[in-house]
Image (cartoon, rainbow, N blue to C red):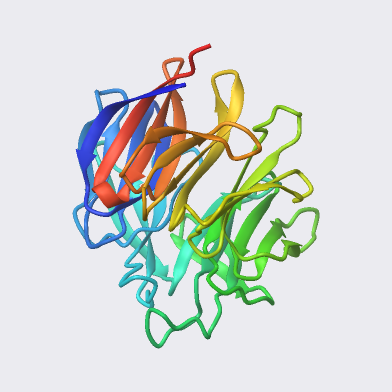
Length: 335
């Protein structure tokens, strides 16, 4: 498999990534985690760049509002994890760019999501706070919460918000699945099942090991998903698990500040992509369930990645945070 860098743009401390496609338009959006810009790159116009916002930044998560070119994003998640002033904003497409409104203050919200209700009557909201309060950046004595509610797009606000009856320390990872979400922290991996048929939100612990982030893919081709987990807060371990969360392989402590993670189909089979932000700061393709890997790029320190398809070809977008570089790689799956 060959990865060829076709975009190399500078953005200080680039972090959050999103593909934004609707209404005949197609963009990649990348935002900084510092007091810097959020930029959009036009995929139908040779990556022509425009500024969504010029500063403020501190963006951990961006989520498209279904069927539109509008999206929600966190801002002010700084300094570090001591982010009491974190807020969510809405960016509304005006035909040429985006107009911003403030949805509200959401202290310490690191990951959040909105998705359509099963009955089509609106949008659910899930917000995961990395902590509930802090005396300083290194204070983890008041664990984070899982907030649930609804997002009212007409009012541009989250309504009926409440915290579930659980506290999760260093609540960092979130992955939307089919009808549920995976949420991770010091206490392990949790399954949050969404409300359906009058049932309330349901939370179940799946794994009792400190986990930073998680993704799924059928990397060994057995017809069942495997899970790749970054273990420990920001690493330094990787663990491969089967569909029952039984360990298939675990790495040595050689991936410090593990952060970027993705899984899915490249060419005719599925892979994982993983990157870490300290040490070698590599971006790698994980090719099997024993954590064997091929190098994509080195000394770039990626924060978040995604794979997208355009014109029948696949591409990898990577926010190479430690290199202050927004990168797009063309993917040649070979044979």
